[in-house]
Image (cartoon, rainbow, N blue to C red; front, side):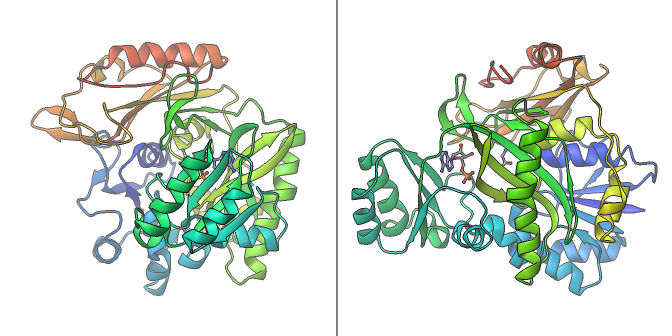
Length: 418
Ligand code: AMP
Ligand code: GLY
């Protein structure tokens, strides 16, 4: 069979790597892919948002299954387009992808189905938003409605910062259409965890939990990023919390989407804030997390092709996932300047030194091949991932790997999982 993965980051490399282990022996393509995928997949130079180009490729290559890694093509309606053309694809349709592509939709949906979340108000006019801020205690969180490449959320410690975030979105148009509406919500304290499940419309099959590290710098300082490292499982997740997340967040979401005529098929990712054992929803994503996917898929023993086939057949209730009990850790190595302006084109040294180690793997993200070198071509470049007998062991192995790799200006956090 032939499988296409859409995207080119670390998450997509992890998907490709795991699909390549399937007993169904699929021929794997990735669009656009990255320089690390060559042993497992053929990279195709079609952008992840060129959904017409991707459809054409899938038809001409007779691809049996397409898996979408990132949110952008989902928000553009790639699943609707492929379904109309009878091309099997795993992911939510455009209307269901609103759970990620519109924070306004999601806040209102969660209110309708009683999912616990931060108190909020929605604004289109800056005067009203600013008036509301006068009534608040700080911090508050200002969020652009639409997709904003990870830059649409500002945690505002002071009123002045919140006023500026409102002004930038509603007056200056910093996020274009995505910022025409904003959500202002109360700040939630607690510990974050990522809870991701595979959904087939009616059934929920949770993956192992994970914890992301969103801030750029050690000690959870600096700006938010796409994620600088992940561990799986999330240490905070226990049976009691798991059941609460399922009962209060995942089931109301999946049943609510059915009731509202948008059954959810795909990865449903709940970004949680947990305070005193009680989970609240920060956000939904409609895809795997990056770098959570690297840590989670590293522990998955179940055949990933079989999992996708079962989801598309609506039969997730019939399978049980099998997991490596050892924990996994992934440390992201990024380019200088990330998440703002990055410098790229630097040659990466040391990759071959760890290419043969057991239970240690380097997932590529922003890499490309130039002549014989692998060079950086974006923000998050590599995700060094390992299993260990416990978290200390996994982290020791990961950091030993990280230390063997170098390029000019690389940055990484030294306290992932600590
Ligand atoms: P979001 O894209 O909505 O998940 O927001 C990105 C990040 O901002 C989250 O992972 C949190 O670290 C932080 N954040 C978002 N909303 C809140 C909130 N209401 N309270 C505290 N932190 C938040
Ligand atoms: N690591 C967070 C995300 O993928 O949204």
